[in-house]
Length: 504
Image (cartoon, rainbow, N blue to C red; front, side, top):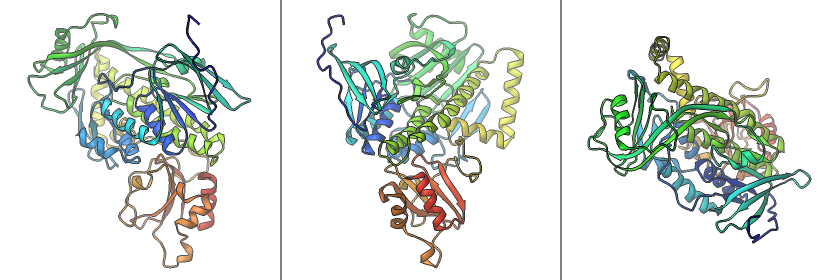
């Protein structure tokens, strides 16, 4: 083994535990959720224990903010980020987010490292075991033992074997977990030689987020919040290897071409190149191994959906793993991670790729298509709302069984509840929330929270609330904010049956 010492060759059996590989936003949210639910979690990360300020993501969308709100984290991030309620695309298309059916009628501009700080604090407080400077070198599944074995190499070169009930690879585009389970990552490089720079500006832009494409040049400019701005740019005629040196003059030229001026860029603290791929793994699950975030899908930065999609992957998977490991649900629940999140990942690849191709339109027919699409989005409300719903994440719904209520699988906005509360506060703690019509005069027709809690096997996993309005629909909301079951004027027996089927 090239002289490597085996400091601890014996596996560590941890019944009911999960190993998460990768401590980016996706891995941190997932690990924090599981640990909060009482699941032992080890988070393996090959980087040192420090959060880098060289991240590429800069936007939190409404749906992600809702998920963070269900964990009491959104307000902290809102305090350090800068809200933007209007986007300008293709030079003349203005997209107003003020009508979003969400508590968060904006996107939040803030660097990824601020998100990671908040998520890491939560994970540490919940008891996640962090293993930094530890590289995953192999993954083996043992169906007979219902376990997964992970081979790792520590900071001193020592090897160790870890064992858990499930493993989640959230270790990015070059995922070692994905490679270890033999999954392909089909796709292609969509944009080559994208430039990134962290710079100071002598002149401040008129808008919080500046993005535009002119001719062969594209540029995106957003503030870090510490006096620096992040510039992401691309020039069609400058396709060079990622290793090609990058100088500030090239960054300034791309910015001038795309945004009209370079804002007096100076004092670059970081310059880099990368290429943007469009790829998606065909299966998000292989046995007891799952993939999430960039390990499962990567796409162009257009629309700012990368970090958001990964965080929503984690929110979908975490409560399902916790339910299965606690014995509240059967293993079949985990199959729904693939059926629900893979189509969303595919849709994000399409939308982000479409945005960048339209932004960089050059030929007459593509320019005509962009002009036509801009006109449609400007004047056709349903089309505009659908497009905004997909970019912000609030418009996606999950597949529902045949014969289900029309609301099943849909996202529930942060509705007001009787007594002054709201849904996403009630969801905190990873609970289901049963929302029923406001109590009728006959108390026998309205079993209280304790009664429903007993029917579902435990009050700690279920909150019961009433609509603040006169709505008559009964809705069971999953921990991730989607409808698990709904009915019109359901009686207590039907509600109890639904709780038994979904809550456990």
